Length: 75
Image 1: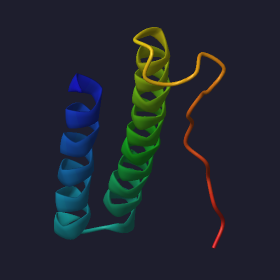
Image 2: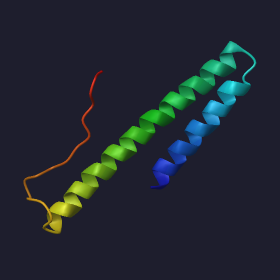
Image 3: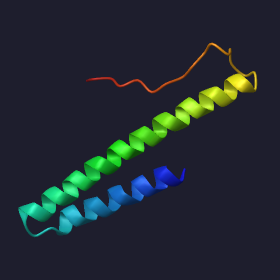
Image 4: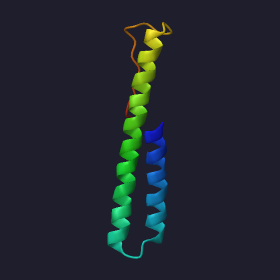
């Protein structure tokens, strides 16, 4: 949860820096920071889903051979 909160905070800060940027270099730096924070957020969510799946298998809520994961869809 700390990673998710940190990533969300970084996203918000980068968006604010994008809006306040006065030149293209600052804008691109903030844009890249926001993209990196989005990637970190998705990786953290993927890890949470994996751990929650393992915990439900251990506690007997789901079959031990059942695993959950995040699937990426292209629209």
